[in-house]
Image 1 (cartoon, rainbow, N blue to C red):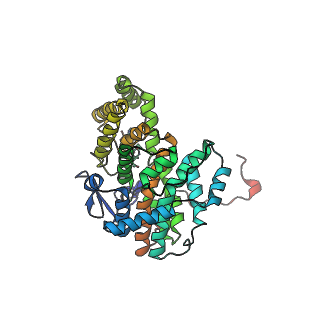
Image 2 (tube, rainbow, N blue to C red):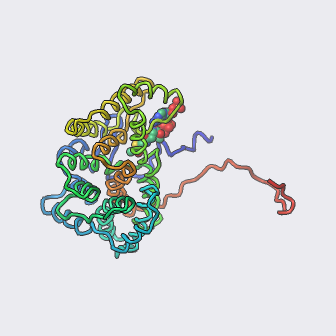
Image 3 (tube, rainbow, N blue to C red):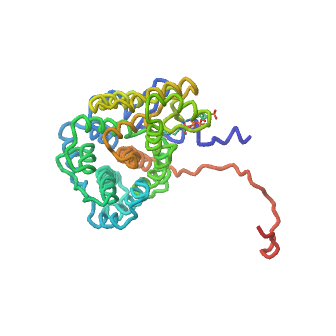
Length: 378
Ligand code: ACO
């Protein structure tokens, strides 16, 4: 009976409807509001994808300009929040500071308690604009260096690199980062998005939903995998060591982060693009070592375990080549996925039904009560 009604991890369960995104594992396809991801990634900017996810259509020129202007106007952080960031411990995981700061950010949002679709769109845009500022500011504070304000002339991706390093990023780097933002923007009912929808279904606010989603994203089985994947690549270090490393890891039954997926069983549709742009960057930087290691690890794991890489395995070396600190890889994922989370929160609230599944009780029943003094010591 248990096996037939309980679905651990909700595997195979359709927990709701969405018109935001479709994962088509059989065809190796990912669709954002009707558009094939590959088509979008080669042709449009992350800002256009963000608009598409939030407003259900690709923007025309003037809509994009006004969206862009709005994002730029929201990018600065409240000065008091910067002060709070300075008072936080500098050694903690960046995802934890980001989660704490997002909760605090809510208190500065004039629309916090307004649950109308219009207010939720404004909050979504503020969060989208500010997460990159938060991540870079918090990183620079933790390094004891001056925080760099957003540059109103730069887009989402370029601003991230500019605020992180303090100089103008190169064109190819910006394009590649922009592509990874597009790849990470949305992925239907993954763990973090589902968390956001569960929070939203209680009619709690958008910031609360995003805070919950950030907590879910941090885990190494989800967004945290891109940081762990880079640690694996560094541990291998050299293409000549890659095959032996994998064989040994599999022998020790290690879970190799950046491999496998609950929905995709043959190919993760995002990998091809991450690989392609990562190779371009590696060739430009004249450093193909990580790409070579990735290729060998991928081949050996496919041969030995019939497992394939997911997007995190190929974004990790790409961020490494850009000189982005490893502890920022998962926060960087959040800087993009926040738009998907927001779109889902808005969709959930439009046709809400509280998430409240059942559990199958498997504990004891009918136990006798003993007064405290008569219970056995531990
Ligand atoms: N390394 C080694 N073995 C693996 C891996 C892996 N990364 N992933 C799955 N397996 C093996 C399991 O050990 C298990 O083998 P067994 O049947 O011999 O015991 C089998 O594959 C099935 O594993 P499950 O955990 O049941 O598969 P599930 O579909 O639930 O897992 C998950 C999906 C959690 C993503 C898993 O593949 C994993 O842990 N991957 C590593 C973490 C990771 O990369 N996460 C990022 C996902 S993508 C994203 O969030 C953007």
